[in-house]
Image 1 (cartoon, helix red, strand yellow):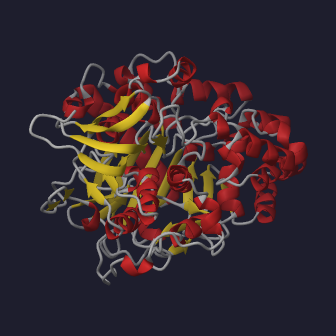
Image 2 (cartoon, rainbow, N blue to C red):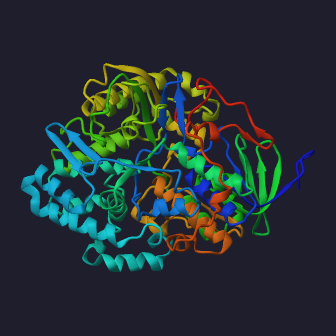
Image 3 (cartoon, one colour):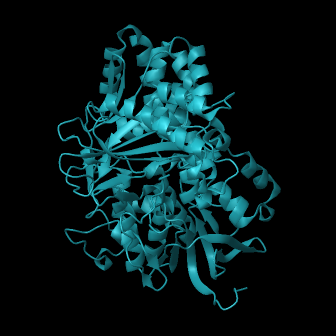
Length: 591
């Protein structure tokens, strides 16, 4: 079954995609003694977690902005400890009194580390709603503290146990988050302020399940917010080191065309260049919908599972603005900002619903330019600076400057954006006049939100690029440009999402589409669980119990000037390709 002139290679496991789910799975499989091949379609490892550079002086994180539960007893450090990486990945804490700051006209609301202080901050910001806010925090805290992110989503039985622990808060778990806010009798302004963080999970309060938002708050308000020293690329670099030092192989620029299936069992993969690689196990860290529809083929699935795949709904895509700014942020708070531009849409529940429908959903919108103007004027956005998170990272920005990112959820509507009819893989859509005009309008809105968070920044921009849903689809292959996978609807949360096992023998899943949810932590947990399913061992329990699966003595030391990006790019079957220059490298999100 090999392509002409190409001999099949035999591996114990092939892992598709080097996002944090796939990379974690590959690292744990290699550490457990499996002969592993990690395949990445792009030129750099890391998927949405990798960094990119511009002009030799700016570095931007594509996806790793802040990570919860990274304290000494946190699950993330334990997961890394199981691979022998705990001594080389350092977690920098963000401000304990406000890792998130929600800002708007006459509002500054800090989300701190600690539920009690969170409640106090809410009541100080909205003193007339103390009773409703106490109820809100009580429900969210009970839900958040009742769920173990690495265990509770794994099965309906474990999920039911968590609901039982939540007691009187349980009825809200599977309801839309907005229903809790309304049940607490909160005013529209307060509801808007407590809704903007839903954007961090690429959804809206009307759609997200309350339990998903509670787990977000528990990860950060309950467990602390952190950032990896050296930037998000160190995670992929660490996993790559484990894989290679334990006998595994990695290939970049190696897109998979098909997962080969015979008689209901995986037999390997076929690459886009025709090469076939034999393996009895395939772990897909790629987009789950495309895994089944494009790589596997729905004809190989049982009818009920086939219908389930067709029913899945992706989360909203993100639009990301990257700004190199002449601004010293060293004395500013080490916080994320959720910037609300106006309260005009918070006069009633109806006006909030209308905003979600018109601005985020773009319903009834046919003129992309008109929609973009409303979007730029009304849409809240997330603002953060990796330079502020890690002042020691000299690659982030020149002295006295900062790399700042602004992002928000946006509709996936090719006609609205101006790339309908284009093959996004070619990048030709970038020259469409409508597409370029909409990008300019959106950037203007982002500059306004950035100015809210960092006064003086908008007039001192030295570099600017914008990534749209087409960018995400082009470079990562996410369905609908959605980097966080399946939306966290009440019907798609916890065990109602895909598990790591599939109906096809030897095919496993990892990544943000799985039961463990989106974000850095969820993706890595999914990879750990998937590897455990392959080798028949509960790796979560083993590592929590102190087991170290990898042999730390095999890991090469990192030099003081170690460059994680250089360690993650240009990896081929024959060795390493010449490193790309900053101007040649194409980031996941850009244009």
